[in-house]
Image 1 (spheres, helix red, strand yellow):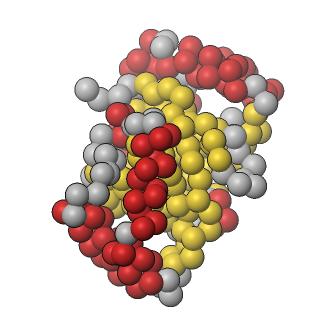
Image 2: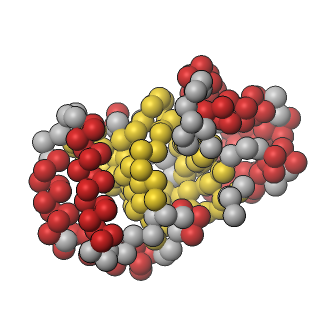
Length: 235
């Protein structure tokens, strides 16, 4: 992952007093998914990986249209101070150097971005399948968040089954099609996700929400991701 350093220098410069979670995502294209997973698993099960102060997850881009990447590696940090400490460890780790020597010849970087969760509900570690909407908010971002929160809270009150879901703002990096935000919902498996998507599409309140925000946001693409493995997940 040669271009990981491009984003990390920006990230570390910005990591000052943020006291909320921050996530970094690195998208790659590979024809050797098993080797990528094995190399990452070896890294995260090393002494370095076990002490790395972040939750790390590897996702397969199961259905993502014409997007180039096949996998995404995600890092979740408790706050910006923790993130800066983590990347300082990353830069000086011999284990990371070995991981990069294994990864670089068999993968191409296709994008990287840092995001800040605005809403993050449920236990993501219990879900294995995620539907993600990359969006470009061209209008009032606060209005969009207000409308989205109103819809999701109402959906829960109406009994809609939603185990994990969230809304995040893109803070830095090269984002797919210049997305400014993304939203997601999770599910434990594909059948459950399909059921939730069918319920969502039939929901009148969802249609009303879409109409209210149609003038301030554009859906760039909708993807399904599957969690392959996760490390350092809080109990």
